[in-house]
Image: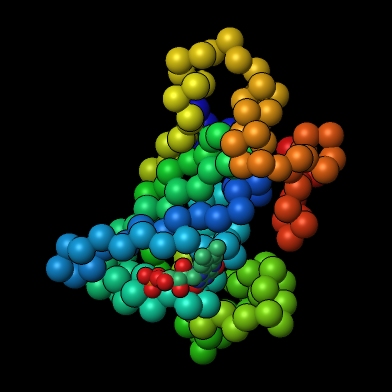
Length: 172
Ligand SMILES: Cc1cc2nc3c(=O)[nH]c(=O)nc-3n(C[C@H](O)[C@H](O)[C@H](O)COP(=O)(O)O)c2cc1C
């Protein structure tokens, strides 16, 4: 699979994921996994995550830049797992506003972004619910209907889940 194909799928699934999970490892080898809501793709090979209240993740990255980010579209029951190298872009960095313009637009004046966590992807793999493997005859619509029942929600726009704060949903 070429990198462009990966990125097109990845972009649309990332845009349908409400949360990502950032895994870091401390200097002593202690794992740490926490959710982040403010994240986006940057260019062809980077994910940006807003550090709003993530001191342990930031400290771990400063000690050990290898991270894993995963996210799923909970209704389509699929997503991605990304291993990468992270760096911390501090607010005082001259490029902070340029690099973080999309993250800053997402938070508006709700929160202060302390740092940008920039993850350069080194390995990308898909995450699929087991039903994709064990019940391949099931359509995406059926999988989504099941998920709506599980989560007790009713889709508002013809089955399309469309979080208002995402702007790239048009390319789904
Ligand atoms: C739904 C949800 C969304 C969150 N989104 C973010 C986020 O985008 N950025 C952030 O820094 N913290 C976010 N948090 C808060 C962190 O996950 C939380 O402060 C966590 O304790 C940080 O842990 P860490 O220091 O180990 O990274 C979110 C928490 C929840 C429950």
